[in-house]
Image (cartoon, rainbow, N blue to C red; front, side):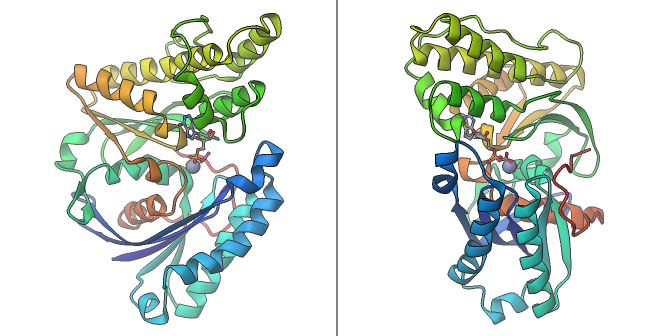
Length: 344
Ligand code: KG4
Ligand code: ZN
Protein backbone atom coordinates (compact mmCIF):
# COMPACT_ATOMS: atom_id res chain seq x y z
CA UNK A 1 0.00 0.00 0.00
CA UNK A 2 1.10 3.57 -0.63
CA UNK A 3 1.19 5.90 2.38
CA UNK A 4 1.65 9.68 2.13
CA UNK A 5 2.96 11.05 5.42
CA UNK A 6 3.18 14.60 6.72
CA UNK A 7 5.24 15.76 9.70
CA UNK A 8 5.16 19.26 11.24
CA UNK A 9 5.54 18.62 14.98
CA UNK A 10 8.55 20.86 15.61
CA UNK A 11 10.97 22.73 13.35
CA UNK A 12 11.11 20.44 10.30
CA UNK A 13 8.43 20.40 7.63
CA UNK A 14 8.44 16.99 5.97
CA UNK A 15 6.44 15.03 3.41
CA UNK A 16 7.13 11.49 2.20
CA UNK A 17 5.45 8.86 0.05
CA UNK A 18 6.27 5.23 0.78
CA UNK A 19 5.28 1.92 -0.69
CA UNK A 20 4.79 -0.40 2.27
CA UNK A 21 4.54 -4.18 1.89
CA UNK A 22 5.18 -7.41 3.81
CA UNK A 23 2.83 -6.96 6.78
CA UNK A 24 3.86 -7.32 10.42
CA UNK A 25 5.94 -10.43 9.71
CA UNK A 26 8.35 -8.87 7.21
CA UNK A 27 7.66 -5.17 6.64
CA UNK A 28 9.39 -3.62 3.66
CA UNK A 29 9.52 0.03 2.66
CA UNK A 30 10.32 1.72 -0.61
CA UNK A 31 10.71 5.49 -0.42
CA UNK A 32 9.06 6.97 -3.50
CA UNK A 33 9.20 10.63 -2.46
CA UNK A 34 10.85 12.34 0.48
CA UNK A 35 11.57 15.95 1.38
CA UNK A 36 12.42 17.84 4.56
CA UNK A 37 12.60 21.63 4.97
CA UNK A 38 14.56 22.60 8.06
CA UNK A 39 13.77 25.80 9.97
CA UNK A 40 16.92 25.73 12.10
CA UNK A 41 18.30 28.99 10.66
CA UNK A 42 15.05 30.82 11.48
CA UNK A 43 14.95 29.74 15.14
CA UNK A 44 18.70 30.00 15.76
CA UNK A 45 18.73 33.70 16.72
CA UNK A 46 16.20 32.88 19.48
CA UNK A 47 18.23 29.97 20.90
CA UNK A 48 15.30 27.55 20.52
CA UNK A 49 12.13 26.86 18.55
CA UNK A 50 9.54 29.69 18.60
CA UNK A 51 6.10 28.01 18.15
CA UNK A 52 4.44 30.78 16.13
CA UNK A 53 7.43 31.15 13.81
CA UNK A 54 7.38 27.37 13.33
CA UNK A 55 3.69 27.54 12.41
CA UNK A 56 4.32 30.34 9.90
CA UNK A 57 7.17 28.41 8.27
CA UNK A 58 5.19 25.15 8.05
CA UNK A 59 2.31 27.03 6.39
CA UNK A 60 4.76 28.44 3.87
CA UNK A 61 6.76 25.24 3.31
CA UNK A 62 4.03 22.60 3.05
CA UNK A 63 2.75 23.69 -0.39
CA UNK A 64 6.34 24.26 -1.58
CA UNK A 65 7.41 20.73 -0.62
CA UNK A 66 4.22 19.25 -2.01
CA UNK A 67 4.89 20.89 -5.35
CA UNK A 68 8.61 20.08 -5.32
CA UNK A 69 7.85 16.38 -4.79
CA UNK A 70 5.68 16.30 -7.91
CA UNK A 71 2.61 15.01 -6.09
CA UNK A 72 0.42 15.41 -9.16
CA UNK A 73 -3.19 14.34 -9.39
CA UNK A 74 -2.19 11.02 -10.93
CA UNK A 75 0.37 10.33 -8.16
CA UNK A 76 -2.23 11.22 -5.53
CA UNK A 77 -4.75 8.89 -7.13
CA UNK A 78 -2.43 5.98 -6.30
CA UNK A 79 -2.20 6.87 -2.59
CA UNK A 80 -4.03 4.45 -0.26
CA UNK A 81 -3.69 6.28 3.05
CA UNK A 82 -2.64 9.73 4.28
CA UNK A 83 -1.02 9.94 7.74
CA UNK A 84 -0.16 13.07 9.67
CA UNK A 85 1.65 13.54 12.98
CA UNK A 86 -0.94 14.60 15.58
CA UNK A 87 1.43 14.63 18.57
CA UNK A 88 3.55 15.08 20.57
CA UNK A 89 4.98 18.44 19.58
CA UNK A 90 4.08 22.12 19.37
CA UNK A 91 0.33 22.37 18.89
CA UNK A 92 0.31 25.38 16.50
CA UNK A 93 2.87 23.49 14.38
CA UNK A 94 0.96 20.18 14.54
CA UNK A 95 -2.27 21.88 13.40
CA UNK A 96 -0.65 23.14 10.18
CA UNK A 97 0.13 19.57 9.15
CA UNK A 98 -3.26 18.24 10.25
CA UNK A 99 -5.17 20.92 8.33
CA UNK A 100 -3.02 20.47 5.23
CA UNK A 101 -3.59 16.71 5.37
CA UNK A 102 -7.33 17.18 5.87
CA UNK A 103 -7.51 19.34 2.74
CA UNK A 104 -5.63 16.72 0.71
CA UNK A 105 -7.79 13.88 2.04
CA UNK A 106 -10.92 15.78 1.09
CA UNK A 107 -9.66 16.80 -2.34
CA UNK A 108 -8.54 13.29 -3.32
CA UNK A 109 -11.10 11.37 -1.22
CA UNK A 110 -8.47 9.42 0.72
CA UNK A 111 -8.59 7.94 4.21
CA UNK A 112 -6.67 10.03 6.75
CA UNK A 113 -5.22 9.01 10.12
CA UNK A 114 -3.24 10.69 12.87
CA UNK A 115 0.22 9.38 13.76
CA UNK A 116 2.31 9.39 16.94
CA UNK A 117 5.70 11.06 16.38
CA UNK A 118 7.33 8.85 19.04
CA UNK A 119 6.14 5.69 17.28
CA UNK A 120 7.72 7.16 14.16
CA UNK A 121 11.05 7.35 15.96
CA UNK A 122 10.65 3.96 17.65
CA UNK A 123 9.87 2.05 14.43
CA UNK A 124 12.56 3.83 12.40
CA UNK A 125 14.78 0.79 13.12
CA UNK A 126 12.80 -0.89 10.34
CA UNK A 127 14.77 1.42 8.03
CA UNK A 128 18.14 0.31 9.45
CA UNK A 129 18.98 -2.06 6.60
CA UNK A 130 18.64 -1.43 2.88
CA UNK A 131 18.46 -4.08 0.21
CA UNK A 132 18.48 -2.72 -3.32
CA UNK A 133 15.90 0.04 -3.38
CA UNK A 134 13.91 -1.11 -0.33
CA UNK A 135 14.44 -0.96 3.40
CA UNK A 136 13.76 -4.24 5.17
CA UNK A 137 15.41 -5.71 8.22
CA UNK A 138 16.78 -9.20 7.65
CA UNK A 139 15.16 -11.88 9.85
CA UNK A 140 12.73 -9.52 11.48
CA UNK A 141 11.66 -12.30 13.86
CA UNK A 142 15.15 -12.59 15.33
CA UNK A 143 14.97 -9.00 16.59
CA UNK A 144 12.44 -9.69 19.34
CA UNK A 145 12.24 -9.24 22.19
CA UNK A 146 13.95 -5.91 21.60
CA UNK A 147 14.79 -2.98 23.83
CA UNK A 148 13.94 0.32 22.15
CA UNK A 149 15.66 3.48 23.30
CA UNK A 150 14.05 6.70 22.04
CA UNK A 151 16.21 9.78 22.60
CA UNK A 152 14.96 13.09 21.24
CA UNK A 153 14.60 16.74 22.16
CA UNK A 154 11.42 16.05 24.11
CA UNK A 155 11.70 12.40 25.19
CA UNK A 156 14.02 9.81 26.71
CA UNK A 157 12.08 6.56 26.77
CA UNK A 158 12.95 2.90 27.13
CA UNK A 159 10.54 0.40 25.55
CA UNK A 160 10.27 -3.37 25.54
CA UNK A 161 9.10 -4.61 22.14
CA UNK A 162 7.76 -8.17 22.29
CA UNK A 163 7.10 -7.98 18.55
CA UNK A 164 5.70 -5.34 16.18
CA UNK A 165 2.27 -5.68 17.79
CA UNK A 166 2.95 -5.75 21.50
CA UNK A 167 5.16 -3.48 23.57
CA UNK A 168 5.53 -2.03 27.05
CA UNK A 169 7.07 1.15 28.35
CA UNK A 170 9.85 0.39 30.82
CA UNK A 171 10.74 3.93 31.80
CA UNK A 172 11.18 7.53 30.74
CA UNK A 173 12.71 10.77 31.89
CA UNK A 174 11.27 12.38 35.00
CA UNK A 175 12.36 15.87 33.98
CA UNK A 176 14.45 17.01 30.99
CA UNK A 177 14.95 14.83 27.94
CA UNK A 178 18.53 13.97 27.00
CA UNK A 179 18.35 16.09 23.80
CA UNK A 180 17.05 18.98 25.88
CA UNK A 181 20.06 18.58 28.21
CA UNK A 182 22.41 18.72 25.19
CA UNK A 183 20.61 21.89 24.02
CA UNK A 184 20.71 23.54 27.46
CA UNK A 185 24.36 22.68 28.12
CA UNK A 186 25.20 24.03 24.66
CA UNK A 187 23.52 27.30 25.59
CA UNK A 188 25.51 27.43 28.86
CA UNK A 189 28.68 26.99 26.78
CA UNK A 190 27.60 29.70 24.34
CA UNK A 191 27.00 27.33 21.43
CA UNK A 192 24.14 27.81 18.93
CA UNK A 193 20.84 25.89 18.71
CA UNK A 194 20.39 22.96 18.23
CA UNK A 195 23.05 22.13 20.76
CA UNK A 196 23.37 18.36 20.30
CA UNK A 197 25.51 18.38 17.16
CA UNK A 198 27.55 21.34 18.51
CA UNK A 199 28.36 19.53 21.78
CA UNK A 200 29.31 16.41 19.81
CA UNK A 201 31.68 18.44 17.65
CA UNK A 202 33.30 20.29 20.58
CA UNK A 203 33.52 17.07 22.64
CA UNK A 204 35.91 15.61 20.04
CA UNK A 205 38.54 18.13 21.22
CA UNK A 206 38.15 17.58 24.98
CA UNK A 207 40.08 15.32 27.35
CA UNK A 208 38.15 12.18 28.29
CA UNK A 209 37.02 12.00 31.93
CA UNK A 210 38.33 15.51 32.65
CA UNK A 211 35.41 16.27 34.97
CA UNK A 212 33.42 13.66 36.92
CA UNK A 213 29.87 14.87 36.29
CA UNK A 214 27.10 12.88 38.02
CA UNK A 215 25.33 9.93 36.35
CA UNK A 216 21.79 10.60 37.58
CA UNK A 217 19.72 7.52 38.50
CA UNK A 218 22.24 5.13 37.01
CA UNK A 219 22.15 2.73 39.98
CA UNK A 220 18.41 2.99 40.63
CA UNK A 221 16.58 -0.22 39.94
CA UNK A 222 14.15 1.28 37.48
CA UNK A 223 14.34 2.40 33.87
CA UNK A 224 13.62 6.07 34.42
CA UNK A 225 16.03 8.88 33.64
CA UNK A 226 16.70 12.39 34.91
CA UNK A 227 18.77 14.99 33.11
CA UNK A 228 17.99 18.29 34.77
CA UNK A 229 20.50 17.74 37.63
CA UNK A 230 23.30 16.96 35.19
CA UNK A 231 22.64 20.21 33.36
CA UNK A 232 22.69 22.12 36.67
CA UNK A 233 26.01 20.44 37.61
CA UNK A 234 27.52 21.76 34.39
CA UNK A 235 26.18 25.25 35.13
CA UNK A 236 27.66 25.28 38.68
CA UNK A 237 30.95 23.74 37.55
CA UNK A 238 31.47 26.47 34.99
CA UNK A 239 30.48 29.16 37.51
CA UNK A 240 33.02 27.85 40.04
CA UNK A 241 35.73 27.02 37.48
CA UNK A 242 35.36 29.68 34.79
CA UNK A 243 38.77 28.96 33.28
CA UNK A 244 37.97 25.34 32.40
CA UNK A 245 38.36 24.42 28.71
CA UNK A 246 34.86 24.32 27.24
CA UNK A 247 35.82 21.27 25.19
CA UNK A 248 36.59 19.36 28.42
CA UNK A 249 33.15 20.28 29.75
CA UNK A 250 31.50 19.14 26.50
CA UNK A 251 33.36 15.80 26.54
CA UNK A 252 32.68 15.13 30.21
CA UNK A 253 29.00 16.11 29.93
CA UNK A 254 28.52 13.91 26.86
CA UNK A 255 30.23 10.97 28.57
CA UNK A 256 27.99 11.30 31.63
CA UNK A 257 24.80 11.71 29.58
CA UNK A 258 25.54 8.74 27.31
CA UNK A 259 26.85 6.54 30.11
CA UNK A 260 23.46 6.49 31.85
CA UNK A 261 21.62 5.76 28.60
CA UNK A 262 23.94 2.90 27.67
CA UNK A 263 24.07 1.27 31.10
CA UNK A 264 20.32 1.33 31.63
CA UNK A 265 19.60 0.08 28.11
CA UNK A 266 22.03 -2.83 28.51
CA UNK A 267 20.59 -3.67 31.92
CA UNK A 268 17.08 -3.77 30.44
CA UNK A 269 18.36 -6.00 27.63
CA UNK A 270 19.77 -8.45 30.20
CA UNK A 271 16.71 -8.41 32.41
CA UNK A 272 14.26 -9.04 29.59
CA UNK A 273 16.43 -11.44 27.61
CA UNK A 274 16.45 -9.17 24.58
CA UNK A 275 17.74 -10.31 21.19
CA UNK A 276 18.45 -6.76 20.10
CA UNK A 277 18.66 -3.08 20.93
CA UNK A 278 17.03 -0.54 18.63
CA UNK A 279 17.97 3.12 18.92
CA UNK A 280 16.08 6.15 17.58
CA UNK A 281 15.39 9.89 17.84
CA UNK A 282 17.42 13.02 17.12
CA UNK A 283 20.10 12.16 19.70
CA UNK A 284 20.60 8.83 17.88
CA UNK A 285 22.56 10.84 15.32
CA UNK A 286 25.24 11.26 17.99
CA UNK A 287 28.19 9.16 16.74
CA UNK A 288 29.70 8.27 20.15
CA UNK A 289 26.26 7.01 21.28
CA UNK A 290 25.85 4.87 18.16
CA UNK A 291 29.41 3.55 18.38
CA UNK A 292 29.31 2.75 22.09
CA UNK A 293 25.92 1.04 21.96
CA UNK A 294 26.99 -0.87 18.86
CA UNK A 295 30.18 -2.05 20.54
CA UNK A 296 28.49 -3.01 23.80
CA UNK A 297 25.57 -4.86 22.20
CA UNK A 298 27.87 -6.80 19.88
CA UNK A 299 30.02 -7.79 22.89
CA UNK A 300 26.98 -9.41 24.43
CA UNK A 301 26.00 -11.09 21.15
CA UNK A 302 22.93 -8.91 20.62
CA UNK A 303 21.84 -7.23 17.45
CA UNK A 304 22.00 -3.43 17.24
CA UNK A 305 19.74 -1.58 14.83
CA UNK A 306 19.63 2.13 14.11
CA UNK A 307 18.48 3.95 10.98
CA UNK A 308 20.79 6.31 9.11
CA UNK A 309 21.11 9.90 10.41
CA UNK A 310 18.44 11.46 8.19
CA UNK A 311 15.82 9.02 9.49
CA UNK A 312 16.62 9.80 13.12
CA UNK A 313 16.21 13.55 13.07
CA UNK A 314 12.60 14.54 12.34
CA UNK A 315 11.30 13.30 8.97
CA UNK A 316 8.10 12.04 7.36
CA UNK A 317 9.47 8.66 6.23
CA UNK A 318 9.34 7.37 9.82
CA UNK A 319 5.76 8.66 10.13
CA UNK A 320 4.74 6.56 7.13
CA UNK A 321 6.46 3.53 8.70
CA UNK A 322 4.55 4.02 11.99
CA UNK A 323 1.31 4.57 10.06
CA UNK A 324 1.83 1.26 8.23
CA UNK A 325 2.41 -0.63 11.51
CA UNK A 326 -0.70 0.98 13.02
CA UNK A 327 -2.76 0.27 9.91
CA UNK A 328 -1.85 -3.42 10.28
CA UNK A 329 -2.68 -3.27 14.00
CA UNK A 330 -5.91 -1.37 13.25
CA UNK A 331 -4.80 1.43 15.59
CA UNK A 332 -5.84 5.00 14.76
CA UNK A 333 -4.89 8.28 16.38
CA UNK A 334 -7.43 11.13 16.35
CA UNK A 335 -6.91 14.07 14.00
CA UNK A 336 -6.54 16.56 16.80
CA UNK A 337 -3.21 18.12 17.78
CA UNK A 338 -2.09 16.68 21.11
CA UNK A 339 1.13 18.34 22.20
CA UNK A 340 1.53 16.08 25.24
CA UNK A 341 0.83 12.77 23.46
CA UNK A 342 3.07 10.00 24.82
CA UNK A 343 3.89 6.43 23.87
CA UNK A 344 2.64 3.42 25.80
O1 KG4 B 1 14.01 13.82 17.20
P1 KG4 B 1 14.41 15.23 17.05
O2 KG4 B 1 14.95 15.68 15.73
O3 KG4 B 1 13.24 16.16 17.46
C1 KG4 B 1 12.38 15.82 18.51
O4 KG4 B 1 11.49 14.97 18.29
O5 KG4 B 1 12.64 16.34 19.62
O6 KG4 B 1 15.50 15.50 18.19
C2 KG4 B 1 16.07 16.77 18.34
C3 KG4 B 1 17.09 16.69 19.46
C4 KG4 B 1 17.67 18.03 19.83
O7 KG4 B 1 17.66 18.17 21.24
C5 KG4 B 1 19.10 17.98 19.30
O8 KG4 B 1 20.02 18.76 20.01
C6 KG4 B 1 19.39 16.50 19.45
O9 KG4 B 1 18.20 15.86 19.05
N1 KG4 B 1 20.50 16.06 18.58
C7 KG4 B 1 21.67 15.59 19.05
C8 KG4 B 1 22.50 15.35 17.91
N2 KG4 B 1 21.79 15.69 16.80
C9 KG4 B 1 20.57 16.12 17.23
N3 KG4 B 1 22.09 15.35 20.30
C10 KG4 B 1 23.35 14.87 20.46
N4 KG4 B 1 24.20 14.64 19.43
C11 KG4 B 1 23.82 14.87 18.16
N5 KG4 B 1 24.64 14.64 17.14
ZN1 ZN C 1 11.52 13.81 16.82
